Amino acid sequence: MAKVAVEVPAALVRPLLETVLLLYRAALEALQSTLAAEGESLEEVVRQRERVREIDALLDQLGWPAPPGDEPRRLTGPAGPIDDALHGALIDAGERLAVACEASWRGEASEDSVRSAAREVIELDRLLRTRRCAGT
Image 1 (cartoon, rainbow, N blue to C red):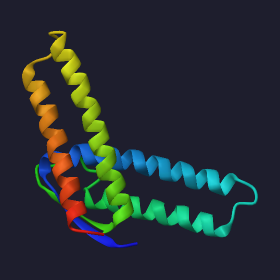
Image 2 (image 1 turned 90 degrees about the vertical axis):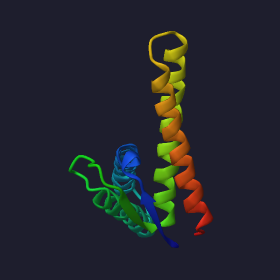
Image 3 (image 1 turned 180 degrees about the vertical axis):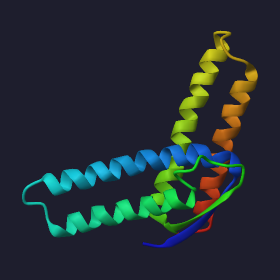
Image 4 (image 1 turned 60 degrees about the vertical axis):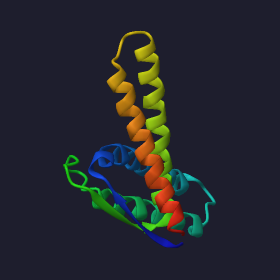
């Protein structure tokens, strides 16, 4: 798989870290499930282990387990896990925007919360587009 690099602005490190932790949990569960399944091929176990290693490397690059700081991060590695993380973070940010819009409409949240959530969506979309334009 092609190796890529992405510069993650400091403001996006926390949401991206949250998504990568979800991906890590899912990869570990998939590996555990593969190991528990009878008749599963060795190739599948190796593939699942590699996925866990790739996501673990992203966690290291994001500075985990330390809390995200105020500095940007550079992610490098196979395109697949990085793209998965960017897409997942964008989907999560979109959901936060929808919640903020609904709360604002009901008068339960400020318009600033909507603008902040919208900025996060825009910045993640920009980061994903930049990654895509750089090629795989």
